[in-house]
Length: 263
Image (cartoon, rainbow, N blue to C red; front, side):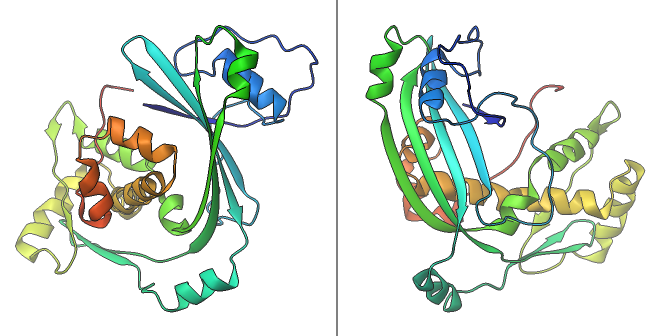
């Protein structure tokens, strides 16, 4: 499954000329659907990093491509930050918002807080990339809309720095381990040598926090997908965990981040 962030300006051409389709890029039907709804897809690139937190009306348009043998099916997903309702605020007041604390094998204590954010999600699709009749296909698009509260701090942690740090721990001189757990710190006889090995690779406390934060960030992503009609069905097709386990006990399903290839 490929997930691509698309940003840019709305379409202006009355008669659109669709770009040549390449793997992971929007197909003609997606382009036409986006044009008809004035959804920006042009000018896509790497999203700017903003650590100031999510704000009302912040929006992210994501292209999801599912490849099954030779067939490619696509969806557009619109994530928009909404205004917290009175009911949502009441439910949050009664919920546990103490955050998460992780202990690392280097002796660090990492604490991640709570930043409740109301999220509106609209999933549009499915549309095949080789759709022969684009106009008819666009008229058959199904919209799945949902809304829930997410932890904005977990989403803001990201995965990019964690991936870079993991690659630094797997250079030509061998692999260096890095462990995390909740509950109790690691003993000093373990943390001292581990800290020295990571310092030799240039790993900082901020890098450790990025690796520790990758786990709650993944859980937040899984949680959003599992609660969103349209995304949930895609998730069940590509994840190698029984769907009933994800629904019954999402928070207890083990998650891990790994880096494949040299990219």
